[in-house]
Image (cartoon, rainbow, N blue to C red; front, side, top):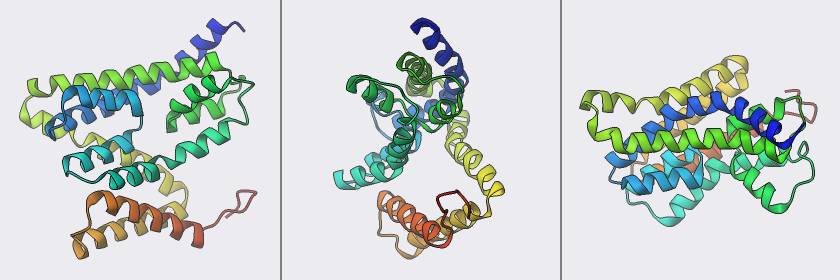
Length: 233
């Protein structure tokens, strides 16, 4: 299979991902501008991060005038899973130069990882480049549209677009919690912790609340619902 064919194969598989990214990144661009972040800065953030949850959390910290350490730790915890995904994919990737591996690692997202890890063909750099490039374009395009079209939308529609992030999270966690009760218990623990921090400890900023909730909920799941090496509960 030629390099061009491999690239096109990856691009074809990345097209549905790109279409799904556009409305979410549109919301990011729109909400970033509404929170006082310049349109150009929102676009640069999307072009250099490619992480929905991390970008939304970072945007909230920026708009709340949070500190650098708060920003660093929050985004690190939220994006830590990408390190594990990259390590997992490294077992299927053939010989690549360091530069190619860095480019591939930059484009790893939940959806890209899911496609790459389940594809029956060999994972080559041209294939990964096509699989990453199209979603990257979709993510950036959605941010551009959201940042600049925001002022042209009716207020009611612009406000309604803000729920897309919550809809995305619901679409991720509900099916997983229905398939696995352990996920449901961890989710409930995270909700309870978040409520306790919000109502009982209101002086804790939203960024630190995310960090504390994520770490404690993960520790709860690892302690009470461990998985052995064979994947059995």
